[in-house]
Image (cartoon, rainbow, N blue to C red; front, side, top):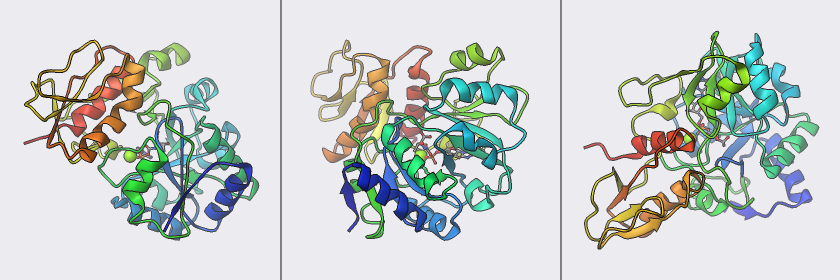
Length: 323
Ligand code: TXA
Ligand code: MG
């Protein structure tokens, strides 16, 4: 049985060695927990896709300890991408860049670009540094959930979701609850202007402030989908409970809203975040709670604003029940 390990200097060293040997290591990042694998080890990546239950044409993000390793994986990097990296890395941002030969098709889902991220969580950072000291070049890590399900924000969530699929040699590192709570902002940097493929904590305004450029945004509605970022598929981030947005709950339904919105009679309050930042932090945990309580439905009142609210609404639209 895979076990959960605390994060001491020696367990981090062991985890890095284990990654180099081709095992999987789930680890905390500031956004959500990732399921890591040596990004150059094809057999290990195949195992990762099996554990996740993810189609192999869906690309993985490669995690590196610093920008120093960027040009091992990416080429023809536009100046605006360098600026973004300097300002927002380490942090909750993924850049899609033209790939080098190091980024094999089994990482990129046959695309000619690669996703790269320098995470800021101290455990992720220490793990990547150890891994690189052992000669590793990058750790591919999708969110540590089964394909289409809610991303995990604690080590226990990873265990609940994946322990039945991981091998005994795989490992889960426990670094507490994730601070951001929704996945990184994904920015396509293969064109003249940056384009947000998945909204997150780094917003369009922040990107245009740093680069001085107009930021293209995919419409995050249901009709303008692109296979480039399968996180944009219609049904994603979904718990077992049916998620309904802005409807009136029936008695026994779960209810999630900002804390200034009172609980309708008979509804079961699952979360009362005080602001949008806390909303993002606890959203996935609250959706999991609905399943733990075996609630059939959960009614969510989405937040408003142009900050993390955009990322939250994006995930909620995808998790929402489609009849
Ligand atoms: O916050 C995060 O980004 C977390 C943590 C663990 O770093 N990771 C994460 O990975 O959310 P994942 O695999 O669950 O979602 C990555 C998304 C997918 O929708 C994938 O299609 C997209 O990134 N992606 C990766 N490489 C890409 C590429 N070359 N072009 C377009 N999209 C890409
Ligand atoms: Mg994911």
